Image (cartoon, rainbow, N blue to C red; front, side):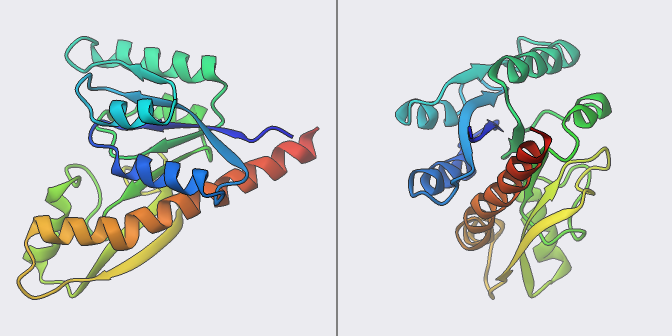
Length: 205
């Protein structure tokens, strides 16, 4: 039976995309395969990463597409590719409830904190780590969750804790959370969801 087709949506460097690709090439995602990378920035480094691995890409730049047109173009491209699982890996376009509903239980997101802490609107990138340090927490981490209409509010699939060290800056904390949490749990969660979808598809056949 064919593997679950995965599309990764990313706006920037693509380090989480790279973690998934590495896991896939190591045989750690036996039930899924990345078939498409979508970005909303034509200068995103993830495009170079995808090219190195021979993975198809689609670019719908924020400066060239109004939001609704951009979302429709992304939705149509996912449909053309046969995408069954959407992975948001640092994607800066907020998707509409209609889009989210279309991929209900088939779209996941990685967030650089232990949700429900430091989540919601405006909590992305370094802002999350700045907030964690300002609060004085001793432990932070990362969360993979299903995407719902509630920003960062969907059911949690996986979490991993990371120590906050004395003298940490938002930048040093961000790097540690990536290395010790994000790059570990995202590929694991991708396989978990792919296996679930794979079994559901097999039962339906």
